View 1 (spheres, helix red, strand yellow):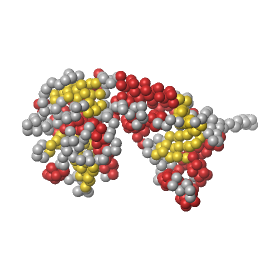
View 2: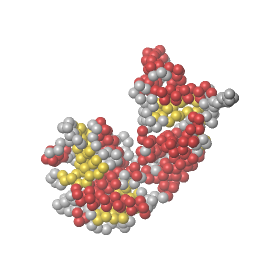
View 3: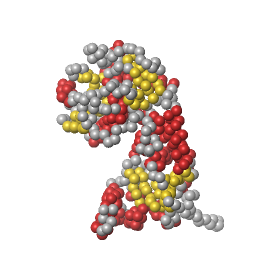
View 4: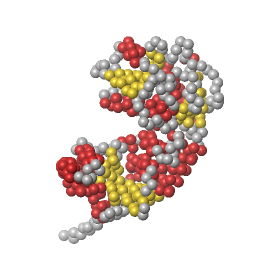
Length: 491
């Protein structure tokens, strides 16, 4: 008989070792961890807001390690990032990894954080209960026994999910950071990064176009530094250089677009479109839907491709006296998520409005919603900025014989010529409309909107820039009286 080969026992690498599979997986995985890299890049400005932030170790003992140093004392946070909804089985594996690291490096890590878009329905009561208990702890710190029933209920939920072995660890050191679904998309991650960076004192007075280039550079450096410590000073130098490059490279494209008139402007055009033969201001004549959709919108799309092929600039200095439908179309074809920025005169303001101006915060969007027809298949959205057009819109929609599922009317806190006080209000209004419309479409499972806009031209462009991923849009132009359909677009 052949002699049996003796099996060699595989030696298990310690979980806390930087050579363990858990620690090396991301370094080998490469492009599979884009979600994780976006998250890290977006958090860099948040971490820098804390003076104690000292080092970032990407793909260290796991996904992300953060080191804080203050008054000679060092603390560390270990972060695991998942790009999907986490199940009880997966959470158990994550907690086991946390427990092994905590045991092998006692006192090294102050906190273990799980970052993910969401938890399954069986785990949400645990996360909610833990947040509730911790939120009340400071109030009852002199009477801790008051929280004993809450802790008992939370422990019961943890055991029900078969996580009882980790009760003490969860209470002492585990955090959940949920709701990061936007990290699947570069354009949404960019918005988060810019918002976080503009909240940093060093960059608070900068504009969007100035800081946006820093996102790509931070992503590149983090991706290239897997398994290598990034010092705070190195990150700060990186950000300053990227923002400085963005400021120095802020060249502008001048675009003329003619509707109501055909005239010359200053400065001269780099690109121009003359649609004036299709418009007449005295009669408020606008192009037919067929002209919009088959001729004019394709011309804008061709213009965009030409600019992309010929120029690296994304800041458009706009000149032209145009219909509101043209403004919304212009913004929709050159959206914020594509890095496009508009600089537009908006009288009586002395300064041009820029679409990368930080939004007014907080901003109050007034919303009225009614459901006239449960069998309707779309939303009628009335945007009342300069005045209240509700009755005109309702009368026009009734005359079409196609009632919507929902009438939604949105407006600034007040209506009138000065209800949008500047570019910050305009950006905030556009963002608020986009979020509210998106929620209405999702809640009612709809994919189509009929939009009626009554406001300043620059706001029409800024609004169009925000209308991404909201399904099919049909825009309408005011005709005095009534309305006429203009262009339609699938976002």
